[in-house]
Length: 454
Image 1 (cartoon, rainbow, N blue to C red):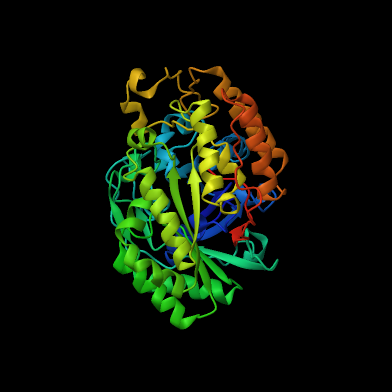
Image 2 (image 1 turned 90 degrees about the vertical axis):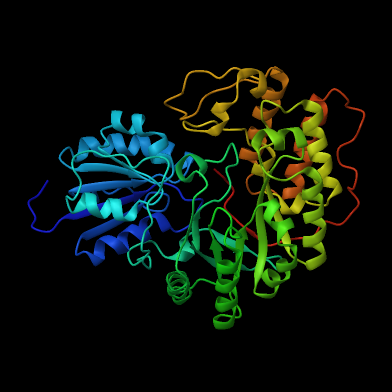
């Protein structure tokens, strides 16, 4: 490492769902305001360049499972390339995988509210290696993210419109954490029901900067946009007045969509093109196991209400769990078809398998309740492995994953048709069709063209 008088930091992202990394832009602002020499690299869009790792501190943003798995070989490479640098992992999945990170040579592990802790680390205000506790995140005085050296927005995920046009997409966060404790959610082990509002002016300044950089649509990445509904509606109303042609999308629980039914029209009026909602299952027993806070009938009611308002609902699912049966999976597909949701659901949502990472509340369940025995923690996959009691369910999931992986650019209806064919062939009742509304015209909806999820 070359001698330098100014502390140098490299911030590294491996994957953020195809978005320009907020997890680099936010800490970059904190560090640069303190006079730190900061460089960023987004390996989902940029080539690994050895010269960028000639730094005093190298910090990896680990916001999700895929990002963490992709980071592991990079950390190994960087440890060899820059043996004198202090390595840090930060974000939701860092504390959950602290032991693995330590084995890789990562000295500092920071949780969800990482900016101040990272600044303290860089400025040597910490005493040796530290791990921010998984539960009990500190309150921060948020700052406007600094995106100056990130790849331009038009190199990231774009919004595919029904007309065939594409829009440049930006990303921001109006809040962090979540008031709820859904059993399978990775936010819960870190925030444990805590919820943090990002000040209105910080959010607005971040959006203005991205509009200036070409953004035509904004994704609000809050775990649940309606955790603080007054704050949320204030922001979208203000943004719409300032940028009436700017569109956006949000993520909201089915429970909150039901509870705040009378406010959904405001979303549509202020430019919300679609609402993502983690439905996870249409089986009430599974929803109870996951402690989702809604029922199948709630989901049906939200679908009807959103359709009435002209607000696109984009459900996400975890269709393969230890409680899934071949019959229940076929019923899941039939429900999607009957509700005319095929075009509103990304094909990857048809094959996702329940992940049980370290720290998951699913570990509270005994084998009888979970419906399977868990294996020893897999340090490669970063999960507790499980097998379904019915091997046919696992085989079906594997075959569907292969189909979705091969057909990433195929029309959603075509992928759904193939998934339905395979599910019916594997089912115990192959005479009962899955696709019952094949003659009904499918509506085309706006969607982000990132094909993966997790």
